[in-house]
Length: 273
Image 1: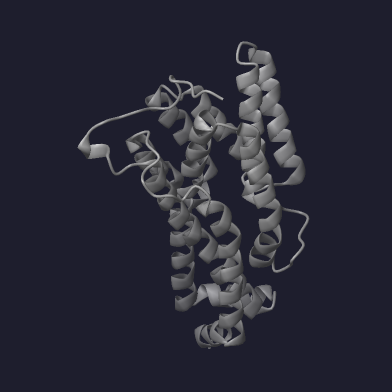
Image 2: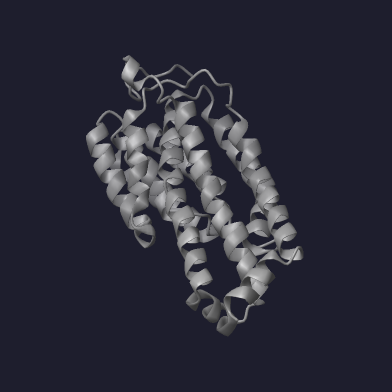
């Protein structure tokens, strides 16, 4: 498949040389890891320490230690919101320049299937949790929507049907970020040559999505707007596919170590004396 010259944005100049796709990807990975530390280690660890007792959990949250714990958790999760818009942007860029889009979708689906047990055990404490799926399923659905929009780019009504179908699929399987994970790549697709409108449209959607975390996802548009259109020199094309499931396994093991080592239980006992 030939690359389309009018897709994406190219910049030159020493001031923006650092903001490659690889650099943006590393920002997204670090932010994502912060979010998952908060959910998989701190939140799940403390819930296990409280043994599901709402009264004990409320007593903990009312203590000075609990308030500190809450602020750390919220800070990590607010920073973590930066990850999603960046990954959606890079996903759309990858769509523009991929030589084989079908293989791109297949890689995402396979990675999603491999990652699902690790996602479930880290986030929900079970190796099989059918009620909610990891975000890679959403990314795969988004790519299929973009492929449909590209195929029918002269038929707006069919494009809208593709978007609605993607939203329906992600809602049906309850994959992470579901509808937002379809609409955001669509905005990046529509306004690929209009960075200001892309930032405004995407920023509004991201602010609404992250409203519970102070709208922090809008900060993602700083590196997005500084993107120089280049991949970068790091050879990390498949890094994310490996890192995504392994980080869940690692965080689960860290939580087990802290829980069995009585760290959470001791912290809880100290805080509600």
